[in-house]
Image (cartoon, rainbow, N blue to C red; front, side):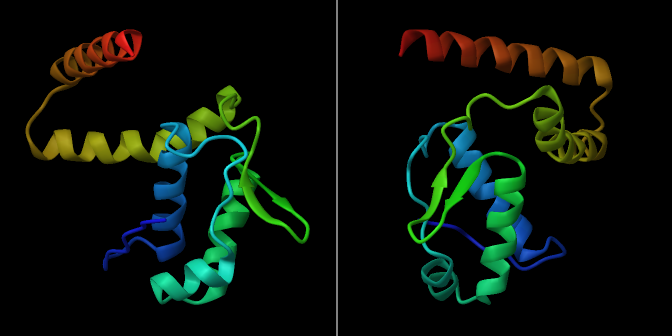
Amino acid sequence: MLIQIQSGPQPIYQQIVEQIRFRILSAQLKPGDELPTIRGLAESLKVNPNTIARAYRELEHEGLVEKRRTTGTFVAETSGSLSRTQRKQILTPEIDKLLVLASHLGTDAEELDELIASRHHALQRKVQRQ
């Protein structure tokens, strides 16, 4: 599994969580898919296994993965059906990043709303064609 770790203020475990979460929510990882072992992913990323364990625990808490004793960590069968609270918890930090970027670019709320609606509509059309 390709995960890119960047230096910066964001903790490594959060970078791992975000990248795996994105792959699950975008259906790149499907329910039942096995995640790399904690030790294996830690070795490939050259990080402490506790970092990977923390990331997996957070994903499990969000309901995106499930640990199966002695067999590993898997994408949860219910990962596609998140509660409203779970969706809000996942989306809020991403929205905050977008708002900061939009502010730096001088984009007002109305322009941002239009852009989001336009992109949402375009993505829906793309999904319907598939």
